[in-house]
Length: 137
Length: 121
Image (cartoon, rainbow over all chains, first blue to last red; front, side):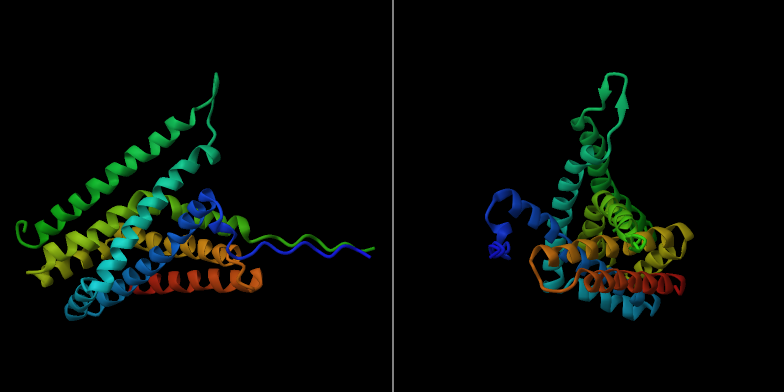
């Protein structure tokens, strides 16, 4: 008789090791980001329906559950970005005369411009919207 | 013995969209959330009309519309790719093909909606 198959890996396998838990946390960042993107898509529709609808969407985005979702989405997207840039050297291998470009350089070349984007784009949006909203708020 | 041709995998396409979405999110995501969380409420509280006009103008501009479409669509493909693979990781007993069709189908539909609504602005 053939030996029976060994039991399948159970559904909680990822809980057993810190590295697996970090992996699952990284994959889980997709859920709040998906919901957040749905909210933005909804915002695009409301924007096209006029000022009152847009105002209602703004109020919706400022309701406590949506504030919480956005706070979670912010943490999620930062964790996503951090883990994403950690993976860059595994995918992007740039040959040089003496081998390949070191991974920490590649990571730095992504993290630094990204951090600048995270800081400068909100400031830019603040400034641009302020221009529109009558000389700054 | 006849051997059927290997099925062409959709994985490279799915992975390209996933990768593009991941890169875009890593660079622009935190800024975008900060904008909707802090900048929009702070600036538009007293003058919604001007804010509506400003956001409308930004998204009516071809470049703004393109960026918004790419941002939404690639985010949908990125997140749904991860969520579909997450179902597999959690041993949810659904066939990978079904999950793939539903996941990428949803991302495609949501992208179409984004395109239609952005063009209709």
